[in-house]
Length: 107
Image (cartoon, rainbow, N blue to C red; front, side, top):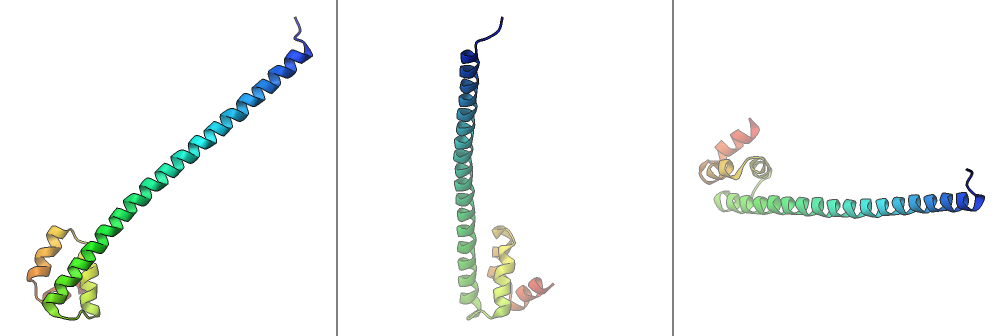
């Protein structure tokens, strides 16, 4: 039994509409997921950057109070200490002499 041309046309149009709707929904969901992931990553990076800047400020203030104005070498000590866990860097920053800190950074 052969289908009528009207039915075949309707069927083809209906299938095309379904495909178009599926594509549109897929794109919308993809965009929403992308936006959510982007916001989440941005927030995480912002928090991490904020922590790093806070640590930099504390370390800079600590070394300034111990040694006065920070020269290039002591600024390197600040950057070096940011690479270490706080539990490791803080005792050194609080107790080590300027020469000891410089020696650690340059070695």
